[in-house]
Length: 130
Ligand SMILES: *[C@@H]1O[C@H](CO)[C@@H](O)[C@H](O)[C@H]1NC(C)=O
Ligand SMILES: *[C@@H]1O[C@H](CO)[C@@H](O)[C@H](O)[C@H]1NC(C)=O
Image (cartoon, rainbow, N blue to C red; front, side, top):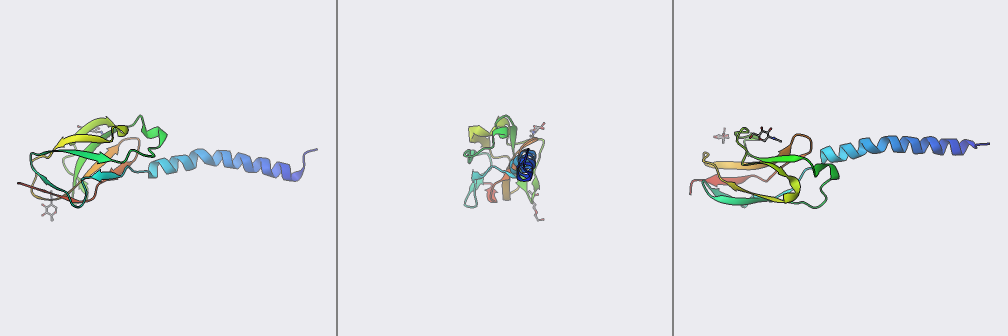
């Protein structure tokens, strides 16, 4: 005969199993790559080349096949999203080389994002004609 506590713990296990994929998904969509450079001390000159790099430790498994773009951000929106600074790279490369586009001097950020994984923004930094 199956005891009542066994039945309850079995149901508990089923509930746990059912909840795992969901919590995993939530964790993955909430996860965002941390961009280490550029940062708030950065000044970029128009036309210069730089590496942009981000933290590749603890990348969730399902991000490994996602394809990312790096796009300039100005005033909290993507700047010229049809012309990303770099495009179609996997997150685990850890860095891309970009050329600073000819944009008005001011405060900018960069956005690292893919369609089916997370998105990370850098700190705000400066671009100027120098
Ligand atoms: C951001 O907003 C400021 C203030 O409205 C404006 O002067 C500046 O040109 C904007 N920057 C870009 C890149 O659009
Ligand atoms: C990357 O940029 C290209 C445009 O150059 C665009 O077609 C593509 O959808 C973008 N991908 C992402 C993940 O934003």
